[in-house]
Image (cartoon, rainbow, N blue to C red):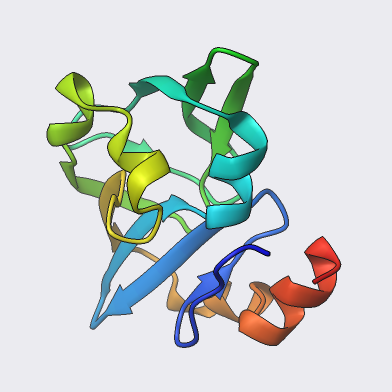
Length: 126
């Protein structure tokens, strides 16, 4: 069974969002990292880049597959988790501790379109 944390928002494409004021930390769910297998590379945008809700902002690569990362919110990238450049396996070790990007949200209303933990649990059938 996958770990699903309360207090986060989830997208249908398996990204999670932790909101801190106007800042969104974005990563991939425990379910997604388990489905991918051993993650070998995390492709991330640059600081200062703009991301749009529903659009690709990077990718995860594993021994089994490559998967696009879809931004759940729009805004400007404040930071990328540079630890993942040298240690992409951190996503497998702790999917909720290994955020990928930190975004200054431009439209907090987009959060309303995301699922809570119960909704995400239903989506993945757990």
